[in-house]
Image 1 (cartoon, one colour):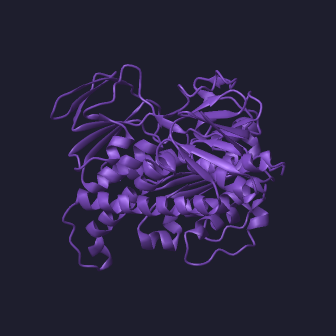
Image 2 (tube, one colour):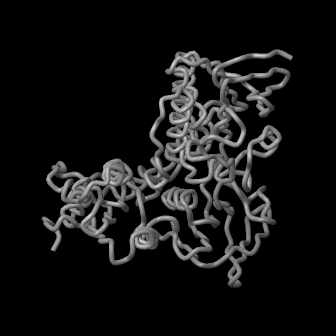
Length: 457
């Protein structure tokens, strides 16, 4: 067995892991990055990047369908899935090449293989042992299913959905969260008949209710069906399709059942508990500075309870590298992590929902304003409806920003700054939003809450 010593050993080369490795190397530390597959993890290869490439293809398809409405003569002839796959894989390949080059340039040692955590801050890879002054666990997540619901054949997860060689005629999606509504949006634009089954009362159930209801209205207009407040009971499949039964007695026929009920932590069989790392339902238990119960071992990203988002993983990785280096970085609370669902229309939010703000501060202590995108010139030009909702404490700071509409994900950073800096609408109102932009809609909401609305009665 060969032994290797580093300042930092990172187990997992996804968003959180490679961010920790890059920042630590930037700070002058020697770093080993252990990855069993490809650098970039789920985000680059099976999540964020490839799914957003599909969503862009879907957007182009919708533009082609409706080109005549803006005076462009175009014909939509259908989706060439082989060409879509080539486009998607090309994007991923370019991003992977860039990441590999960056990792190499920073002097990070990449160890290819399956790692297992051992005692005394050591990660074992085959017959080799990599010991760090510190270790970061960044092993990511996997698609969940429901008890008794086996994945296989025509019952698929998002990973298999990405690899489909054809556009299904009919699809049932189990789960109306981020993954479910994004694939519903893609497949509907591709020409499929889509039905979402969600056990809770709304689509995007973790968002502010105004956004959830707005998304439901938009999906109805697009012809995307959904069944809310009803549970999945079972599925039968043949070579030709699936029959999905619900607890209310309904049976839905489709070509595929996409199981989109969330993601679980990838921690099984990796030696965490044996090495002294406490787990809770598979997630790694950490303190507010991401230290685990094992000395010198930190955890980042999807294995830490909370939002499972790539940019949260990036932030965790940077934070831990700086924490280990003794720089005392600032803890970013979960409520300040921006959230975006890239369906059409998009949902973007940061801070507290209306219900959360009322629970935390009291219903009489908060004020909210909704600005409809129908009044926004740029939104009218690009053909999107939606809304901006801003929540403030009465005579106090902004505590939540919630957006619905195509392209609104690009606006959420301003919302994050407003919430994180505890800005009052009166502080923001004097600042100018360029015209015509969708950002003006956010400015209008701030103006209204400051008591001087311009385009709102």
